[in-house]
Length: 482
Image (cartoon, rainbow, N blue to C red):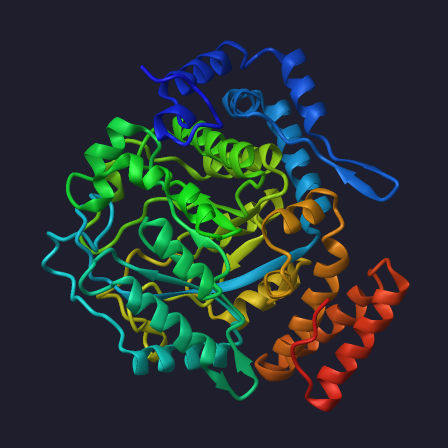
């Protein structure tokens, strides 16, 4: 039997089953211990002193107590605290991105994904470099600056050389005023050597979903293929960081297994990264299992409703206040609206989850990895965000200015990152308004920009931002950043 040790590099030590079970039992015993819950909530409250933000977050055990509590008044307090923390760290900015599926060839047997090897009904497709160029130009014509590339695990069809060539192709494309400025990568667990190659290719965040932290459930859900190796998959983020990748993104696929177990495992993984590398996850994603080609979500026993789902988001935001939180177009407009207030800081817009989907006039469904619930265009999503009081942001400045890893975290945890993020969001939104927005959205967007410029607290930064925005609007300049 392994012993819980967040500093260990062995999966069964830092994601320790006995520790998770003990935590869940502790949470159940204390779900109505309101004195303890008040103490936990008070610990998590953000405090500013001398302009510096202090927000301690929570341990996995403390956060589990909040998730277990079902008292309506305490839940209300949790949601209010999550909203306060989100505002302190990320303000009203929402970063936008799009997924780009390169290939759905895959040798794994994952029971929740239509790309699994035994699925003979889904057409298999791998983009050529010319097809990638066409997809990227279509994404640039929407206004996107940040992509997350996706590919199935297949050493013959999708080797690391193909991924690296594709990254170079994407970065090299300059179309009108468009350019992809940050490529995040979501591909299978690999070696330190290959992570070094991805680092040298100047990727942004390396993203890998655990799917489930329960070893038994993991092995049942991954009966065949290289992904069936629980240790290799769970220890991937350590290898990525050893390979020089500063920013990594965690996530579980909620709905496969018991959500409380997954919640605790996810926070233990975040604590492990902090303990070993001094840097927690740059992002945490919260996907839910969705219907796809031959996948029926009701076949899994871990399904969760919208109320539990949004409570999970709020509790993650309280526990890991500094992390970026991502929600995709798997979720409906209504769910995404609720999630934005509670903690989400990044969303996809105008997404297509099929291989080669962006160049098609009609949304193709035959190669989709999952059904897209929010099928609005990017312009419609931006219009919606503005109406909700958010600043849509296409900022990639931190990554390109070297503010990654511990450098980003030190700025984020102290609350100083907003001095860069707020003006960068406004400048990139101005680019979108000038180059891509529909007339009605442009009118709304420019009014928002003028208003939000006055909310930049630093007078000097505000003045420079105004000058840059004038240059973008009147002189065709692009890509200013703080």
